[in-house]
Amino acid sequence: MDEKRLDAFEKMLEDILLQYDTITAKMEKLKAEGKEKTVTYRQLFTNKLQYQNIISYYDTYGLLDDNEK
Image (cartoon, rainbow, N blue to C red; front, side):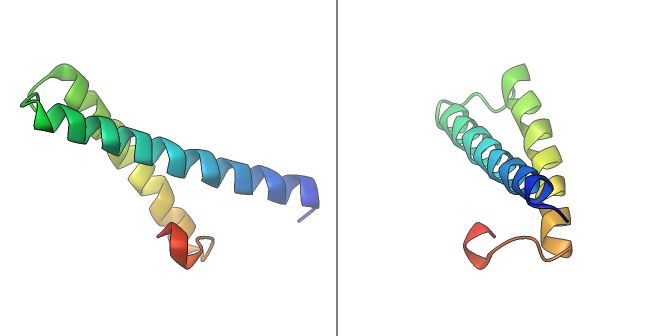
């Protein structure tokens, strides 16, 4: 795999992990406010599951460092 493609994969993983953390933080805030039944919370939950699925593929193929798990 060439360097440009490898960099793209690394950037994609970094962005996915950042989005996952951002969504998780937003969900925690909404949960603390008792807004778990809102459309926003449910949309965030769905997005979180999608990112979780992508991250699990990275893990399955050995592309996650121990600190990223």
